[in-house]
Image 1 (cartoon, rainbow, N blue to C red):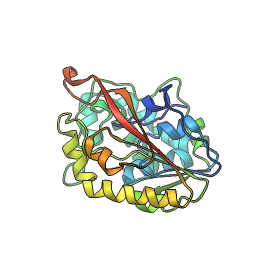
Image 2 (cartoon, rainbow, N blue to C red):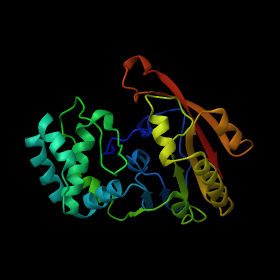
Image 3 (spheres, helix red, strand yellow):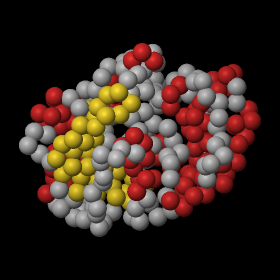
Image 4 (tube, helix red, strand yellow):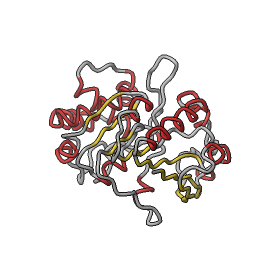
Length: 264
């Protein structure tokens, strides 16, 4: 099953990579940096805890899980109204109900530039319109997405609180915003504002505590010397190639690498 949200740094490339397999586990699947949820939808585990610190993202997942019909109906309405003028009107509009806010989130996600999520200092979504105008996809089933999320615990939490919920037998997949990756049009600077180096250190401590409790951990991160030093001597490291597609200028879009660590 494919993710229904496009997210910068998403892991569709990882689940399609033949050089990496997720370890088997007997407990729950725990993901503290949910984003587009590519790994969750690929594995489709029986029991899961999904979390992210973005409340609008989390509300969208919850709304699709709990009220997919109304979300889909509203999304069809937005598809019919889509235009450049309408996009900017909708971007500044405040919706009042969970299903209309979820549909708005998806509409903007699918029609903004490159699926980027960014807010200004006032907490307002400020990404310009992109080139794609499809809001509804024929091969997409919100009913099946809702079923996949049906028994999932979904939280708006800090990653440390989420990881602390993992117990022996669980698998934690951690995919934090990268603060030391290639500088793609200032996106690293933006990430630094939401996930600092101090957060990287806090993540390491949280993951190592989880490993000591018997939790299996897979972490992706920037394939950078600072990350290598932070996790020196810990876990099994691999460097995997992926396509870089964030940069606005296509000349900066190329093959890059990401670090993948497996612990426990």
